[in-house]
Length: 513
Image (cartoon, rainbow, N blue to C red; front, side):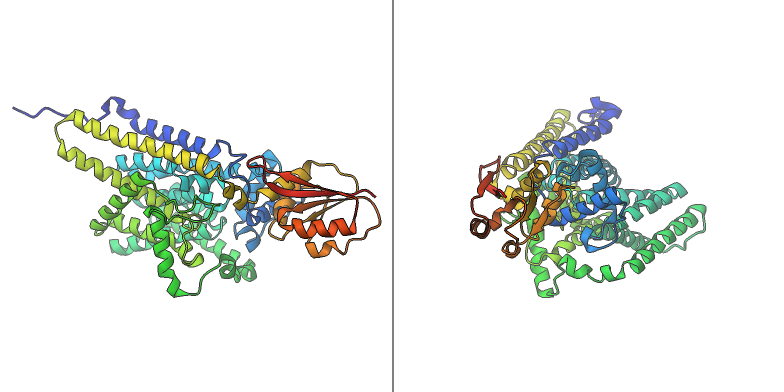
């Protein structure tokens, strides 16, 4: 008697399984990245504002951004910011629209890369994990270059794999275009290109085959030459700026601290109480992965280590290690989610591999019981759904409703700049603020005329002349209030409050002539 054929779980979905999974993950990613995007995060930092000011100069005066530290060595990001500003005006939302879209689109190449490397089950799990993981959601919504890394990294790896397996001129051309984009999004993009080049170099050595002169290979060489020529021109034209790269990045010259930093950044993935302590990126002491994903990641990591003799797993482990290095070298001794974002796709893929392995163990326990196999898969699906719900709660409820999150994102400077842009005071307008807050206020104020001064310059203002109106950052309140009352008596000192928790975030002082 022949054994009864057991149908795969959920086989009734038929050929639409992959399409439904990918579409569902994309919709989830869109929701997680665009929901309440105008309010969360509640602000941004000076570095993002500085590049946004370059985007305004590009729109207003046609000033082409260069390759320098003021835009994070990412001139293409200034162009993307300019598009957002053109759409939504000078606002926090305009700096987040396109980065959020890039973060949502990352689930598509993630699915293809993971399926190509680890199989369909791992691809399904990895795609949903990337769509809802707070680490990925935060990176997509901050408006920084980190938002583009999951998309550009997985897209580059996928295109490189396609060009390797089935060489065609069009694929070589697309890969070259993506490599050029990576060059224009700053050091993280450069690391992406270095990763893929390392993958190709090791693969070529491993094959021990002499290259042929097929049209595809010739096309690849031509496009590679184009990319190299672009690199040479960029370096030649921006040498003075590039020489400051290490100082700008905060590179640590203390090798003794690198091991501690590597441990901290690895433990931030799964270690309880060892996550990124920066409210800009995360709730303090919350690891990147919840319990279910941490177990899945640890399982996938062990599977990859035991199968290290296979090329795919060696590369995946190298990807994880190299992806953590920017955080290791530039944030010594501490974990930093934003700077370790290159490792994010590898972490998600290893978690998907772990889920795939756990399911296979379950299937091997019940090889001929379709109901039991379906229960096992349904359990994993429920855990992924619960993981998604937990990601939503952690980002939009816990992190998004914490006062320290608003302080870390310069809420006061954002409120001040927004009010300055919409207000219409008579006379001269002065803004008493710090160098760290000035770019934020200046960007949001847009073309609103105002004079930005430091606290020590306040005493030098003339008392005679037209009426004056002062905006004052919260950090400058005490000294400014004392000086203003003494130098311009009779004015009105007024606090302005946060709509979130009613704390004083900035002040105004209005005087008459």
